[in-house]
Length: 417
Ligand SMILES: Cc1cc2nc3c(=O)[nH]c(=O)nc-3n(C[C@H](O)[C@H](O)[C@H](O)COP(=O)(O)OP(=O)(O)OC[C@H]3O[C@@H](n4cnc5c(N)ncnc54)[C@H](O)[C@@H]3O)c2cc1C
Image 1 (cartoon, rainbow, N blue to C red):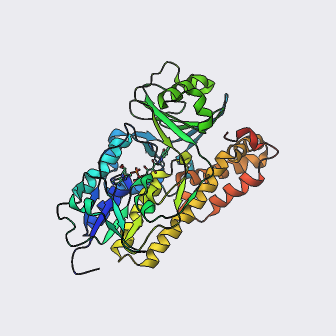
Image 2: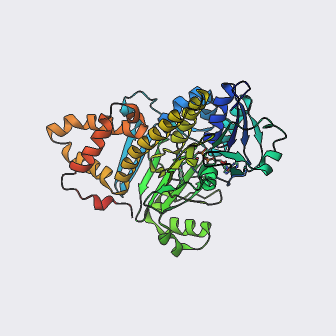
Image 3: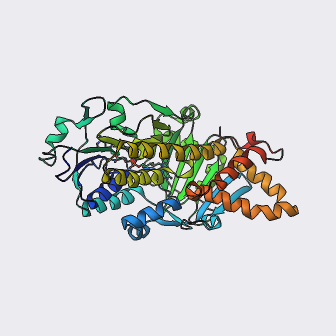
């Protein structure tokens, strides 16, 4: 690699991870080209942000713009059963992160970050990128792809960053193995003019007879998604529309949420399968965002992990892209995801909200009264993303309590089927 000339970077994909890394590298003096077709489904999934994203938006200088088209999100509300809902506000975490986040329409959100990348000097090529394997450690842009860049990379490509989301362009070319999650759910979602909301601005996540659903209030509409095993869906029709509409009609809770409302967009179907690359990098390439790994979205971790990986990789490449630095990026990411997966598992196996039930039962006795706010604060820190960089106490408390503090309540009642 010739370090006397400007280093060049090809970014595959102009989603949040790609546009973020491109912006940061361009501002550090790299010549950056982004491959971005702009062809996306009518709705893009991933509309609810975590407070941990806010500092990243501020650093990119886009928070005010994102705020202008998003809905303020103070917390989360979970429906356990007909008469049992739990509301949690980020402010109760009393941690280092902001006490709010946003629910955001992804087309506008992604466009804001892409425009930010252009402003930083990145050039966008409206083409699908193809790559070729050069040797065991290196990847190159396919000749066809290079031809479309009008000489932009005439002096070579120093780094290829895969931000192609779940298309995982490099992983597929390099035949990188992936670690898959246990569940094979599908997610179907659409926007509605009206859907019942209990706590203004909060994301609502609800247990269903089968699977679970989200209700995400946006500025002028509500996103309603169901996450469900496809074996339960096929009985409801063959097209995404049929399956979604019939499922919403057939489930008592969904019927109640949507009463008086109207679906105003097509239904979009995403598979919800989790996938983590065994390897994140080679000599001249690195994967970020969902192209590195995607975990179950129930706690809205996707954009946070994607943008965070973009920040980290921009720093690593700007510092010379040493192998050891790339290795610790991969190691840290996998460590963090292991923690999130433990928390996610406690949602699916029912232990997380069985702990809530157990806590409510104990909250009337004097000791329960004293420890309840403490537990609430630390669990809130887990869900804002605060606990990841903290001492580990909040994470440990979550693991300990969900294992040993259920006081005879049966988690099977809240297992996601
Ligand atoms: C059901 C579900 C619900 C979710 N809910 C949330 C949520 O509430 N909150 C949250 O934070 N996250 C959520 N996520 C996760 C979130 O959607 C992703 O983590 C996030 O979009 C990842 O960003 P990214 O930039 O890595 O990839 P993407 O957003 O997928 O962007 C990748 C881009 O690359 C493009 N591309 C692909 N191949 C090529 C190629 N060969 N050449 C050029 N471009 C290419 C794609 O078209 C796309 O534009 C959810 C995911 C699912 C499946």
